[in-house]
Length: 118
Image (cartoon, rainbow, N blue to C red; front, top):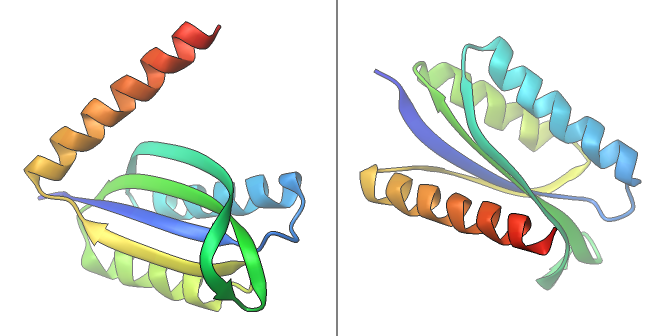
C-alpha cells in the first residue's frame, strides 16, 4: 500500500535560479526512479528565515508531495538530502487522510488564484 508524504526543503540562497531548478528536478527524478509518484510540487520562492542557518538569513523553499510504497526509498531520499550541501534544512512528514484533503483544497485555491491573476 502506498503512503503519502510531504517534504519541504530549504535550498541555499546563493544558488542561481537555474541551479535551484536543477536541484529540485534531481530530487523529483530520484523519487520517480524509486517508483514514487509525485502528487504535487510547489516553489515557494525566496523567504526570510526565522533564525540564521549556516549564517544565511534567507533560503529558497520547495515542497514536494509524493506517494511511495517502500520505506527504504524514503530513507534513501532523506540520506541524499542530508548529504547535499545545497540543502540547508528539510522536513518530511507522513500525510493522513485529513492532511490530504487539506492539501487538495489548498492546491485548488492556489490554482484558482493563478487563473484569476491572468
